[in-house]
Amino acid sequence: MTAPTLTNSVPHRQPPRVELAETLELPSVSGDLLCIGDLDGPTIIEMLDLAIELKADPAKFSNSLTGMSIALIFEKPSLRTRASLEVGIHRLGGQSVVFDQQDSPIGVRESVHDLGRNLERWFDAVAARVHRHEVVEELASHCDVPVVNTLSDRHHPCQALADLLTLHERGLVLADSHIAFVGDGNNVCHSLIQAMVAVGGRITVISPDDHGPDPKVIDDARILAARTGAEIVVTSDPDQVAGVDAIYTDSWISMGEDQNPEKIASLARFRVDAALMATAGPKAIFMHCLPAHRGEEVTAEVIDGRASVVFDQAENRLHAQNAWLVARLAR
Image (cartoon, rainbow, N blue to C red):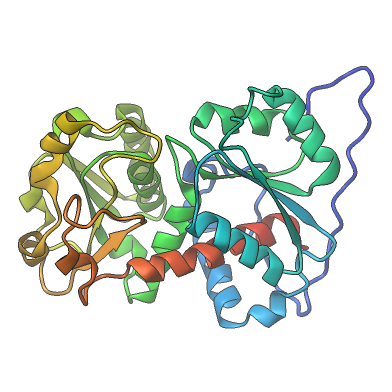
């Protein structure tokens, strides 16, 4: 990405390129990762292959980011994102610096433009967890190093990569798999739609009409599905989980969103419980990006049960994120 041209601009230093310990053909990844739509299906599969290698033999990649520094920006509280990024970057031989923006949202103390132009002088990449997707888009447009969206109100691409990795580990062929997302059509739902469509799978979104996914996300996904052979169904009928490989849900009230009794009441019949899992079938797994609210979007019986893979998903965030960092920065 090219930074805005300024009369007094100084060419940004090029990040050091580090040769991996063994010859490895990395996915061809360029630009930023602001949503899963920034990656096509073949690249996603290559990224997952790389994540599998990273997970199986982390020592081989221990010098991948030697000499590199990654800025980690958090407008929201974080457990999985912060831990997986800090630990993951350390394992790759890089350095991470955390900027806690919870008490000083991006763009308030200093413009997003100026923040980006500063960060590009010190860091080799930026990972940002923000409230509004427009903020990470603006940051990327003013920052001449790669930017990865680690969560916004519209997209959660790193989570979707971790989800696909988890499905693969459970023996599912992604192009043949059928996932049902049940509940609020939020950022996680959007990224899962984009990911499943990119790899040619099937996704059924089951939400109340007033809390479904963004229609534009659905429209764009259907255009891509015509090329990849994917299938998208949007319905308000929970019984449509019958026969799926996985049921996925997420919190009904997103972090930073005001409590909304009407929304919770609207979503009550979309709770994932033992009966809904039984409708899906005995082989269906349960997925959730966490944090979960037991008794609200999912019962304790389900999330703590044998079908649950939620902690596998959490672990795989590290490997999925590291795959993007290695593919984007190491050569």
